[in-house]
Image 1: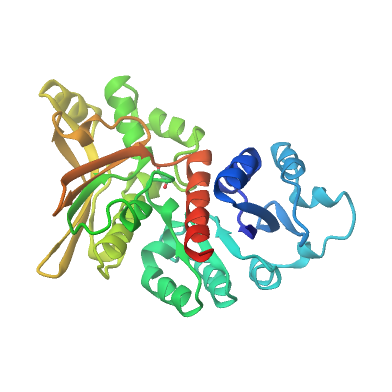
Image 2: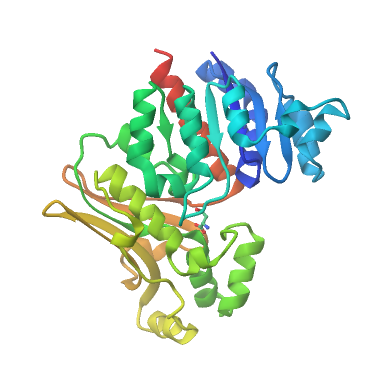
Length: 349
Ligand code: HSE
């Protein structure tokens, strides 16, 4: 079965997805009867393309690798898509699925939320790794998807392509979650690891995290805990069926931790981690993000570098910990593929 895909935002994650679609074309077709034709791309900085017969990914990726504008694809011929904004593009393209991969704005969730609404209202499935809309408007967007008989999927918003939501939709379904606790921000975990293991200064470690592409465009979202906060809010609302806003959770970042604190904890057999947690008590969600000193016996204390991990306390299984990448080009690109394959499984029956 062939799906037409529209990409809104073609930065690191979008390019990761395009590389995966190019490299795994045969495997996806042979093993999953799943084919993708990219028909539209809209990127605020790089330009736009609308090609109903499908974009040649090899050619497009070559252009992107060279840092050129997407419009170079048409080699000087008229490109009506250049005049369209993303909303018009979403409306005009006849994609089955829109991958919304623009930058995260945790405070306003825009313009991503408007793009997602437009796509759902025009009968398109939406897959996103954008934390803003999922943290602020998830229930409304899920409802809108349901009303339009399409899917709104958010696997990439938490732990990139490491399965969380898809895990509970399938393998872990039937469990009741008593508590979720984990490391949800790769940048701060990377900084804390570098400070402890390599005696690196905070500023140098942050700079390195930015160079490696883990940090948000504005890294204060990472170090002050807003990124982890958005993720724990999403988990609270989707997996614990809560209805909280980021301002309902307590938040503290890693700024208060000095290298001395970290090294002293190490001598005592402990390790500092930025821990996000959530649970439901008497119907009320209690969620927070704060630095915590963990015993080395805690599975979360062994998570180093930009990795993420979550421990779920489940009524039928007890504690289950998953760990894996929480950021990255291919890793987050994969989350979009995983959600598209889920749409294929659910809607092609
Ligand atoms: N800045 C985020 C992190 C990226 O460091 O985890 C993934 O959401």
